Amino acid sequence: MVFGARRLPIALGNRIMTRGTGPKQGVWSFLVSLGEVIIPILGILSVLIAFDTLSIFGTKSQAALSGFVSIGVDVVIAGWIGARVFGRNDAQWEVLNLSRGARTEGRIEALLLGLAYGIHVYIRSLTSGEGYTDAVSAVLQFPVMIFTALVLWRIGRLFRSHARTAGEVSETGPSFRDRLLSLGGQAVMLVAIVGPVMNMLGYNALANFVVYGTALSLAIVGVLLIIHVLFVDLYGTLSKASLEDAQQALIPVLGTLIVFFLSLPFFALVWGARTTELGEIWSRVGQGIQLGESRITPSNVLMILIVFAVGFGATRLLQGMLKTSVLPKTRMDIGGRNAITSGVGYVGYFLAAIIAVTTAGINLSSLAVVAGALSVGIGFGLQNIVSNFVSGIILLIERPVSQGDWIQAGGQMGIVKDISVRSTTIETFDKTDVVIPNSDLISGVVTNYTRGNRVGRLVIDVGVGYTSDTQRVSEILMDVAQNHPMVAVNPEPQVSFMSFGADALMFQIRAILSDVFYINVVRDEFNHEIMRRFRAEGIEIPFAQRDIWLRNPETLVPPKSAPAPEPDALTDRAPDPGDPDPDGE
Image: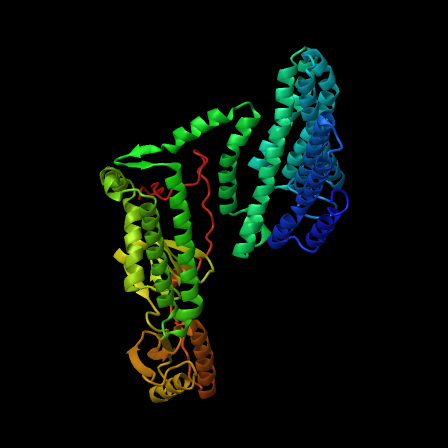
């Protein structure tokens, strides 16, 4: 169990992960990897129980055996954390982004760090049991201290290498987690230098506190990273999302944040806190805070979260059943089905919140004064949001606009994609999404081209020459309209001689289409067919012509050239037409 049986979960985990990189493979890999810890620890404990049952060792030998067992347990747990954080072989489930050689180095250093910590604990128990002096204890601990510091230095370098590689791969640079790991790596490297120096200066207790506290903190951080990856894989598996989408989701981050807060007592114990102090802090926190006549405690908050999560899940399950199994079998259109589904969701969420609060034992009537005081400020600050919320409810109940309708509102025309509580999203014919506040749809003018059905009217204006046979033109246009498959038979299309235009005789076709979404396609086919029939019949489609009349066309003819006058002898200039002639005239 210690040396051989653990190879089975390792091989099985590698086989699972090399066949895929999806969230489901990650969950199975984590579950299988637990065997790498459970099987060796059971083997070590079996050895200890066997020797204790045989009673072949004395008191000191039994204590030494227990110390070696503790070292073995530390090494097994550290090796599992290193394998999950740094990855193994070609499996794509490492937490840190490192090369294959760096990953192997990280696994070995995690194993050595667990070994160093186990030896440190063993020497500390040995020196305290034998009554050694502090000087002897410091001498015995110093080699282990140097070894631990070297391992911490190497691990800190790996953290910084991961952050640097992540910054080079990402276009936006390293993420917050990567920057935090880089700072943590620098801190670990600093501890690796300061710890041995303090030990050599005689501050043995302080050096042990800093160095081995850092080692245990690294183990807790490694477990938190592993749990975060597990939450991402679980979310991707349950929501059937891809690994990239699961990594960008909010729920895994919130789950990791909750686990981080739950792990704070362990960090406190590592860094010198006592269990009595933690118990006192927990008792004070457990008293909660007074809000009106109610007292809100952590247990109340936990109860609210659990009950609301159950209600939320039940509501989503009911919505899915209605959307996929019940409503499609009815005669409702897609807009009505979506309205019912959304309404059930809102009612379910509201009831889940009310039930969660009342189950936790919080008296809502005691919060009425506080809620009344807050509602005044919220009403002024969020009046637009409240208006849109109420308008969204009206849209879902009255359904003047439904999903899939072709509408024109706020200067935008398109197909309604989604109606939410705050806004409505329409997709324009340019394939762009436009978000319109619900209050604009309620208080503004909205044109719905497909309300209740998709029947719509097509109007086409046609002009012909004044020499055309008007009766024949009407017959051709009526024939074109009646022969198109998209034109409804009842009511039948109409062709009207509308007016005597300035350049043409104006006719108009009015036809009801069975599906108005194809209006542009039908208009195009109508125009082509009308042009073909007019050419075959010799009917002219005139275009505007204008005759230009000139009042004085002679001004456009250049005048005949005349000899230039001679310059004046005295002034050396050409005579001005305003100068008097020699005769004085």
